[in-house]
Figure 1 (spheres, helix red, strand yellow):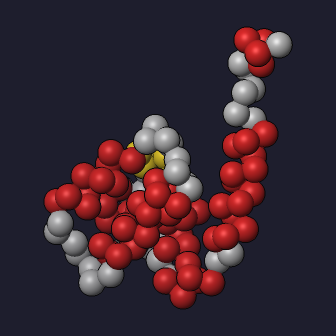
Figure 2: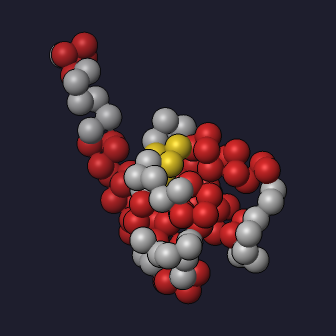
Figure 3: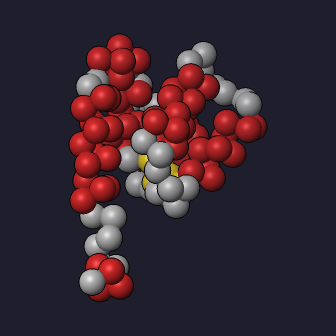
Length: 102
């Protein structure tokens, strides 16, 4: 984890950060560092707009590490990542429910 990064400053370095917690921090609109709001907005946009995750999903810890370096975040192959996540979601959408449709 990045020492004194946004994950540590706003979420005490917890393993799981929920959508509601991220949204609450953004609503408070008081940030310790200059680019914290941008980094938090990027996490929000990535998970709940671009990837369309359910609000019950958690922010992956690896994303907190990546967003600390905005150049690395920009260089990450997000298109391929979102595509692979979408394919996985389509393939497993009916897992556990298949019997209803047979």
